[in-house]
Image 1 (cartoon, helix red, strand yellow):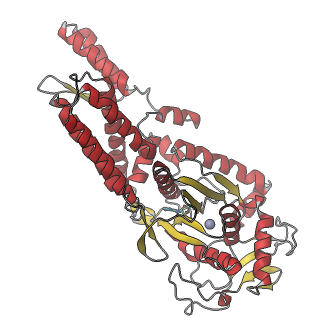
Image 2 (cartoon, protein in one colour):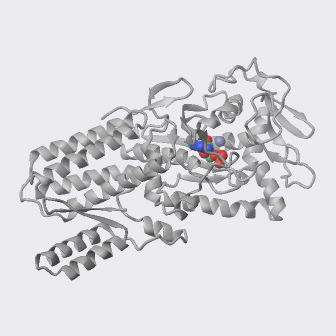
Image 3 (cartoon, helix red, strand yellow):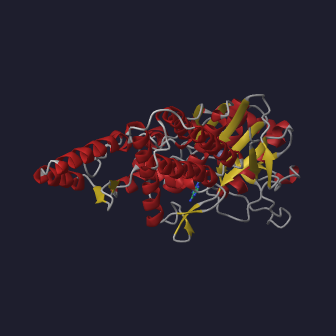
Length: 479
Ligand code: AMP
Ligand code: ZN
């Protein structure tokens, strides 16, 4: 079995995964800030995390993954106040939408999905521990982390701490500023703002403290893997390290994994730039859930993903190729017996797939293993070299791949219906298309051209492109 190597941002190297607890991998994932719908840039990172956990599970490892929902920050407080509703009511609908979107993309639910506002006491006690160690100071009712007390500050992002302007405090959850030094652990309430009454005074938590408190509460002082998008490296993850290690004196995270951004027209997709698509935006334009999942996982997570109309089309075609292949495997009549070469070929694909993922989740290599297999088996089938008894093994292997890819079963229409979106055209399942094509061939044979034209029209109306090749066979695909 190939050793699992992952790129650790801390050391900037590939490292072999060696979990603290044998057989179990503990993962913390920075979840969404639920003040709006998540966009597909966010989902790029969440899909990467899904591939990670599915791959580890395919290796027989137990996964204990915790994802937070940031349901309190400046924007949430302001938006809730403007809408005249409580923070809880305001965020509820975005939490629901996020969980529904996860389901639509076949993202497995982490073992714990936890809200910041349910963990205020945990954050308060972590701040108290830091206070007891003299790592904080109070100012105007807020409490700040004094990074001068944590000499290792900057070790993850390799920023030059000495070069940072001193005395500049971040007074906001927005994290674009470059000249951050000390950061807020606890924020005094502004007039009219929602606040919690606590032992450390009235107020609300800073953004960074929530992840430290929740990660350690559920996963212990030292966790195996912490994930997020690259934009979180600094200051968010740097601050999490300062808080957690400042309080416990232990290594907080053994491996830091960061996903590169999804970009559109050369820029990071982001709410603030306004250049974003939500899943629902894309579904309204006729895209399918499986297309988006394929696109988001097809580019290895440490490479930027350039989102274009072309890449969507390619992703859609790729999913169709896989699904059509499965229909062929399951419906075509193959010659009796088995071909030992096929067994070897399938085994090679399994190994290549696993080796790709074990190499820092290289999904491009893993997918190439799948598509190479599909091509070779199709060729073998055309030559009648693929036999009846080769099919079950092949199907089992494809299903093993699909435990990670999650796209072989055509449930796109159902997923859309669950979101209240009607698919554009009545879609025919691949098996139905095959059956219609067979019927059309039979009609042609008995020179019933009225019926064969009728079937062709039905297929066209359902978005199926039928192509009659010179050798008399028929090829088809979804438009
Ligand atoms: P947020 O809701 O802004 O806290 O972001 C949720 C997750 O999405 C974080 O891990 C971010 O790093 C990630 N993220 C945000 N924008 C992008 C993008 N354009 N591409 C990939 N990941 C992103
Ligand atoms: Zn976080």
